[in-house]
Length: 371
Image 1: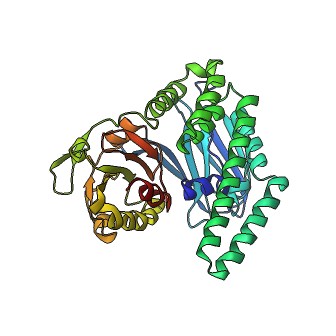
Image 2 (image 1 turned 120 degrees about the horizontal axis):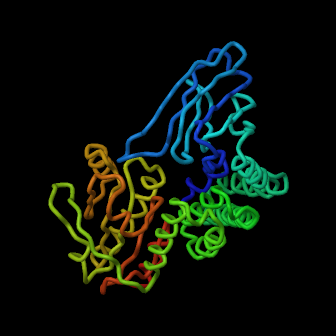
Image 3 (image 1 turned 60 degrees about the vertical axis):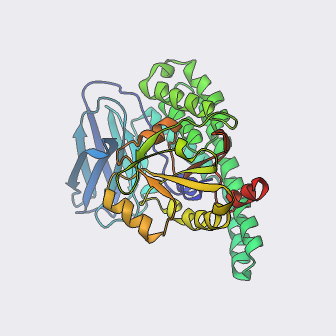
């Protein structure tokens, strides 16, 4: 499981989509304490060919008030932050009047009004940060701190896995609550997509069917999510791994099928992905242990910058096949329905998928049984 990604959803406000309500455009008004005379940035996080489409900035007045105006063709994910400020706020902008109130030093707790979708977002956020949930989280955190000081690696691993399992279960429970209550909402599509990112494809498939029974099912993003989920379902354990080829670090084409006859870990990563870089030592250890027993790794980077990619390969001393088309999105990622990294697929000697997302020590545990 992607620990960093999972924890992030609890630490940052959840970004939500909203339907376009009119053609007049949007106004985003802010009135925040501790924002006087500060520079505010608003960035459209929807990317075209890996590039930010839109960015604007304005200066808050002496009372901490600021205003952005614009038009969006569809609900789009934006990020709001202050220059040299603490944290940021992700929110979806739609063509309506939106008001932000709160504290510039605590953007996560900013209250927004004017968007029905964002009211649902705030309801979801309250579920995630409810006192009933926070108590067991704090208990898990205290237990983890205690075992870390003991230096017992096995105990540390157990407590970390307990925390991750509780966090994941809470997330899935709260997502299901919101999707069932508001199936005809853009946030429902976003949250189902979150489940798909965490490889909870069966649950995502079931909940997306609820959305598809409403007008929201006809939206482009809903249809795109359905395609992604169907693709992931087609790549379940036991199915044949689709072949592809991409340039390696020297520019020569290398294909997945060229490794047939070995157990292959198809690994998706990027130089900028902190959890991916943290996973590389585990891959190095597994590779050193099993490379002479019929095992190899084929890493595909989602980088678009060749220098950054090659630098990370050298820094992490990655000794197996590396490839990337240096495009956004990477074609192999699209082929395998990869929407979050790190992600991997273990493929047997006959080219069939036998396991997915073997993170940390799980890869070695599986290889020990196979080899």
